[in-house]
Length: 79
Image (cartoon, rainbow, N blue to C red; front, side, top):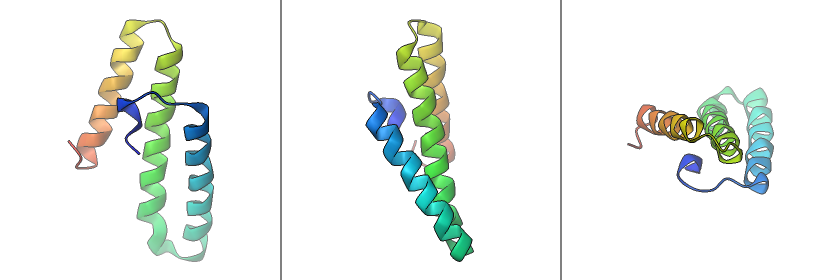
C-alpha cells in the first residue's frame, strides 16, 4: 500500500476507504485494532495527496506530494 510511488487510481482509493471503514468497525469492537486503523488512515491520506498531485499539472505540487509520501514512509519506518 505504498501509494505515493505509483499511479493512484480511483479504485485503489475506494478500496482504502472501504478498508478504513472496516477497520473503524473493528476498533469499535476491539481497541487493539487501532494500529491497523491508523496505518490505513495514513495510507489513504498519502494516496489522496498523490492522486490530487497526479491530477495537477503543477510540477511543484507533484514534488510536494512525493515528499509528503516519503515523510510518511520515514515516520512509518519504511524509508
